Length: 301
Length: 301
Image (cartoon, rainbow over all chains, first blue to last red; front, side, top):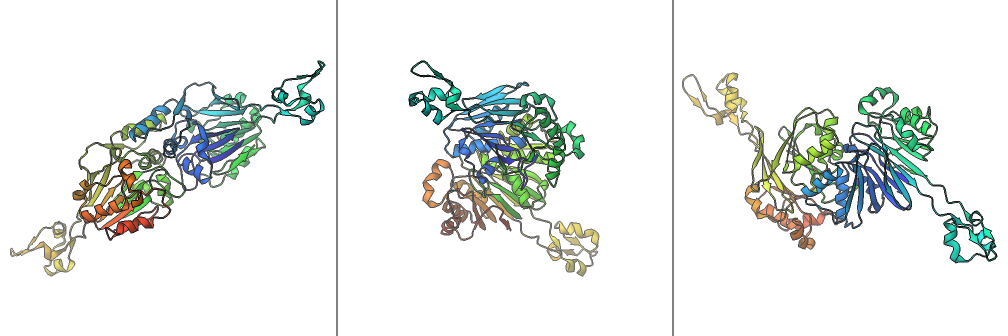
């Protein structure tokens, strides 16, 4: 899994800081999470093959998470895209995009498929043989969801020495990789474990932005490998969290600690701060494994 | 008058080229013309005092002229703007902006005043003591207008030696600057021309993008000081103009020549071209005074 941070600053785009957008490469998928203004420029700048994006997940309809989407959809059209594009986001997103395309007489020549969200409970919104995606209800000023991405287990891998030892024919290999035992000529059963290795462990990623401190998410994200949790403020501005429905770095770490996640990535910083290091310092007082998101930075896990 | 090109490339924003937006400083006004995605970043990058923008003119509702507007409106809100913002653009622009603000529960705390355009004839859309703005109907795939900006004459300036010669009292100076003659004690009339100088000549600027070659605009823009006319293509791609309703550099120059404008500025280049110089070369075969727009370049006139 590779996560590229295209933008991780709150509020308005500036010369050097970009609003929220992330590209998640998970199994065969290129998934875009949020799409603030200028996201398509960031995708180009970091030379990411963005024509491979088939699924876009929008957390909420504040401009800094969403205003880059109409332009990206139009660019796909100009580039001659034919593959369907699936968009997941709060109810209303379809009306907004449709109106903008209508006003510009710029209907896409590829299928644009919306899945509008309005449930306040976690729900499965995408699943195929490789991954699953579930919403994580957030606590923000407007209806907002995080997203939980989970890889599905790959097939077991063949133990070449094991199958050679029993002289097993190639025609059986697919069954073996799918977990089946093998019955030899004389009725002897060879357990699958002798013939295969465990697949690589599956990974999981939870994206939680924007949200106030919200313990309700803990059960759902417990034990994820990586949690991106917003940290708009430092403790010195903790009093602003209640009204704005944002979190401090320490609150994000509190969630990470209780959910026993592997790594916490902080982001969605208020642009009032000159340095990001205090975010990491304050979070590390509560939880050890803290990384700082920054525009253009990527994480492999 | 100062014209700063924030973006002058067609279609999609890229790492180094930006879609259409221009800041026109005319008399006391900071006027934004079109607002492609990323315009607010360009305004910041070029250190323009964009909080002074009170009037935004949108030519048409294709994304590369319009998708930066919702973000700019939101940024004004976050910056605590109180002054009214006037937006002029095709019918539908109010519905689009209103829907986006509603979905984000992000109503502006300053007045947002729309003037929706739908006339296919030129019409006066703004006028105060300093300038006037008139639409220029364009020929594009969707309803589109250019804009003609004209300075109004400033008051005449006082001829200090003239008023001293006749020992005229200060209380008369405002009347004199407004063009009045002065009657001396013995009934002698002093002509205003003896007491004042002509004000500096007024300037005019016509913005015409996007449009096919359209002779209908010539009468209206005749003798303007500066014409910005789109030149999406070179002559080698002239066959694309009919379907796309764009112009070549030579066609833009043809309009400039017939309208006897002072200076022609070319822009809205297709990103297929590696160099801009051929645009200037092709236009100069028809019209002498040709400038090339480029992102970040400014013109004073």
